[in-house]
Image (cartoon, rainbow, N blue to C red; front, side, top):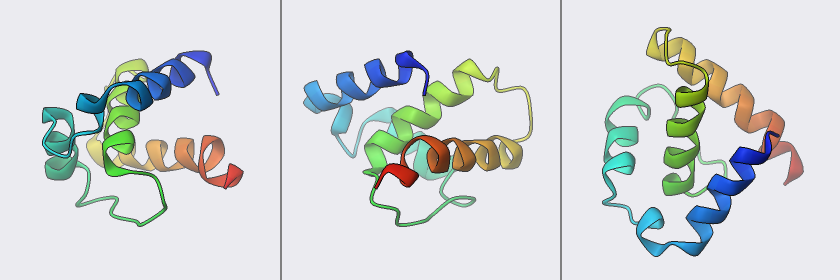
Amino acid sequence: MHPIFCYYEQIWVENEEERAEDHPRVREYKRYVLPFYNEEDGIPLSLKALLYNRYTHWSSGSCAIEDEVRGFKEFLRENYLRKM
């Protein structure tokens, strides 16, 4: 995993506001991503929203949302879920 994602995770852990379920990023994630990816995988929704936001930022966000979500699911499997 790229070190920048470790930094984002650290920010999420240390900042209660980042973990709030009413954070604008979480609301955006619920609205646009959950219809395509609504799996209970043990990753808190607010962390998933932060990671998705940064994942799409670094991957340019230049494809259809279905493709972004597919790539994000693979990113989670490779970097988060296999470690559990």
